[in-house]
Amino acid sequence: MAKITVQNTEITLVRINDEDYLCLTDMLKAKDGDFFITDWLRNRNTLEYIGIWEKVYNPNFNYGEFATIKSQSGLNSFKISVKEFVAKTNAISLQAKAGRYGGTYAHKDIAFEFAMWISPEFKIYIVKEFQRLKEIEQAKIGWSAKRELAKINYRIHTDAITQNLIPPEISDKQKSFIYADEADILNVAMFGLTAKEWRDANPNLKGNIRDYATINQLICLSNLENLKCGFYQ
View: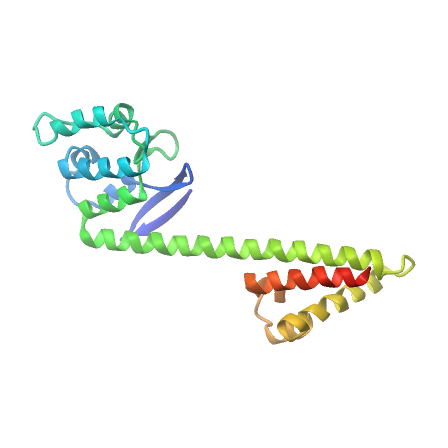
């Protein structure tokens, strides 16, 4: 679960079936005056948009029930809740959740259209904040992937050094010097400087030189380490 703040309104995001859903109940707090989600859902334009979306993304959508619901839109007596709509049509674009984080949620595509009902300005800002959140998440995923790749590469390299270069009788401190020297051979080949030289040049950065390498650099480094392991044999 994540949250974004749009024009002083905090909006909850959840992942459902690996897709992003935004809380319409939270978004509704930004609307002036009395307005309900059922008012939006009973609108014919809303139903047409949801129907097209479901046709594209949901092979199990019940078009028969949807057609019946849609035919009633525009009548003064017509009103339907999200829970009832989902139950009748097997829709996946909307979700009514209970519990601690309960409320009405909509797939991001639908939620952005709902934002337009609040105001055009609100829609622009919610799209902007959502994109900002996704950029942060992707950056974290990329950093984590690089970190894990660096760990795997380092383990392969150190195992080969242990088996082929380090005499059993030397101390742990002496072993660490050998590991560092062997790693720096590759650091210089790949980055043009040793780990210590990088730390001295970047005192304000956390981690090590490989944490800030690109995926392409780490792949090249992995190939170099595999080649180097072969040379130890």
